[in-house]
Length: 357
Image (cartoon, rainbow, N blue to C red; front, side, top):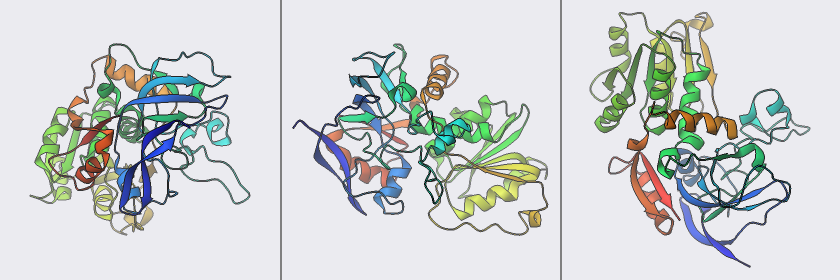
């Protein structure tokens, strides 16, 4: 039995590097040799026990690599080809996919469908913080990487870029809109960039860390607000002359930022929620205008599939966005436990960590 190294969830507080068998390849699968991957905030929720997964599961859902082996029924690809796969790996044929909700590609049961079913890597199947990862439904999910782009240039596409951009897209930002983005972690930074690319005239970025606000300005923010120095709600209302914003994007997953987004919306505005919440949310009566403010609250799970990945890589290849500044640290897979310690404690200005097996 041939083994590989993989980052495995053991118990809350422990993700460790272990040896696991290299997966067998089914007819519709592809085995990817991982060349670069990263750690996500969702992985930290798993580490802390805030999101349950099976013990022994390989973690990670953002793979860049090379096709090592193709399933017998897979066509249109070749072994040795550079590819990425989205964090969400839809089958393409489920009811959710055929309804246009590929991210929710869960298996239906007598008790209904499973939310977030399209998120399989590091959730319901072994993920990609390993030397190899098995990609299901390869013809739906593998996207060739253009020769001109490096691993690090496309590393944000599988999840962070797709999620952040989708927060802007699903909010239906229009040309001339004013948009506020609360929290400038990796997803918030991509939401800031996505809002600007979508046509927003003014993008206001909120965070408590000066370094992240500086990066937000590089990503297209017109105003940055340090929430440690002022009340961001008051400052946004001042900047907009009391009108409020057309769209507020929540990218942290806390009651405080969710509520702040509601309080800065104009009547009829949209709250686009990207955060992963670990406790119940409460909607304040006044901010919600007792339910009579014509507000929209929408949520988004990262869109996946090969066409989504192709589009995101096209944006990068065109030069319209450069996410290189988001990779702040680099580790070998052998040192992934140290990388988790850094990332989970948010030390040394970390945004994203590139992991190379």
